[in-house]
Image 1 (cartoon, one colour):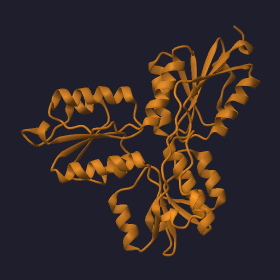
Image 2 (cartoon, helix red, strand yellow; image 1 turned 135 degrees about the vertical axis):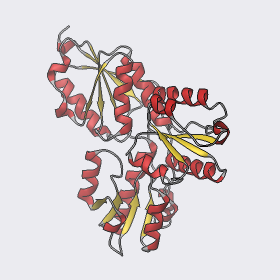
Image 3 (cartoon, one colour; image 1 turned 120 degrees about the horizontal axis):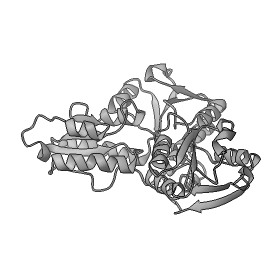
Image 4 (cartoon, helix red, strand yellow; image 1 turned 180 degrees about the vertical axis):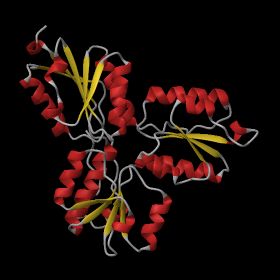
Length: 329
């Protein structure tokens, strides 16, 4: 089949989740209400296009609280921060707005509760990821980071009745399948281990992975639009490959190589939860230019989740009807 006959399956849901939508809105509203500069600790979300757009409006992205001037306003990113970062900002008397995704905050609260109960905590996640660093900071003396099945097999804890004293948490943007494999090992080794009542991997991550599995069942090539630093985007690539498709992570349309389409009859397209739809549309335009003119909507489920804005921002918003964050639809 020639390239102009190639079909494109457009996965759904894809792109921005409610937590990302909320975080970006928080920065935009802060800039409108208080004026630039507004300081953001780390990238508000892991997408260069989003970061550069906000930087152009007056946001300044920093690595350390020490970089914020004494009269500055600092926003904590969607990935969350440790209590130590909050204390540092409070000691300096800085004005802060918390853009942490509520689903990440849920994990933080679970970590504090498990620590108060005297439990050791196993955190399944990727070392060095901003979200993981923030979660580790909520119980640094009680948390054990596990990245792989091998790590879970080798995990050593001090208590003789280890299982009774163990609880498990996960990063919110992990591969559902990989996490299940790790949890199976932990449950086998520590039958009494306590897991959260509700899955820590967020609804958007699960929905996007399920959508990729659906299109990968038919597509020979799956393009994931997202940043190399985006955990959930990288997991989508892995999920597509595990389902039997070739998969490539592309930051933008120009990254697509025409040679990838050689002999391909069906191309799947999706996007990570921090990727704006404008980048997806750019990829579709590029595919059309390469002869892929037949584009099909392959949505498997709709999303209507939205999260309220932080109280510290609501107070200064007018009119009152604007206090609810936009839907992620």
